[in-house]
Image (cartoon, rainbow, N blue to C red):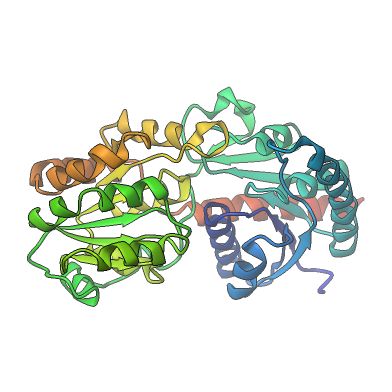
Length: 378
């Protein structure tokens, strides 16, 4: 470890919505400031423990997990793990000696940033959603800077700490040069037809899948084609059901799309959950979208994310409970309406932040550099 390098801890994860921004910030830091030394702190057993090393960064895990709201007796072990995680975070910080700690949300960011703050190390929070999470609200008091993606976040955080930066998106999505026609051909579909992309996240979304299965006759008769990511949990069952139906060549079905840049390029309209990371991607890519917020998230924050776009005419919105009956017909109607697609595309583009990762990286480096200079003088 170079004693003169700027050392940065980035903590959080649990979902792609936390991990993708974290890696994007790390990539921007490395690109602009090649000598920075970055260490990730995640939660044992969560997806960041695989995704972060795959992106080329070191990560250490804490034994932290969330509260079990169904079985309160199990929370004794949760409390023990939280205390142990705080103790471990302190050891990690003492050993690595960071100049700044960055929290992107998720279980691990709580004890890591809390301990860093108690030890006098500056902290920066990156809040992706329009409705702040519990962990970030608790950490805000000790934070030096809070980077947000939506206006009006002063209802959760001190105004003087807030920076409106947007959310970093996955590298490569905005840089792809693939044409719509070529992208559609990679899925074996027809470039002359309008294309709808249905994506419920890597694990899938049950109600969005039901929305298609209940309306296979509409799919066949629509004149529209679909790229459908079912999620790995639902894929086999859906294939079994489709095999009992007549051939549907206008329906490309997969459990997971590895090259999302091709899927986005192919899509004239996207149907998606309303995670903050996905929304940021749609804004940068100017994609017309129908949002179906997940009802199974803390504080119903996906609905808040969706409504922030809807009020600007930048997206359409279908409630999860209504989706199996209405979503597919709405998508077929919308994708056929050229004027509506153009209006949605124009409006969502006005909400884009194209350099979020770079702006946040600069702020992280500035906090770290100030702390390093201050401690060297002391």
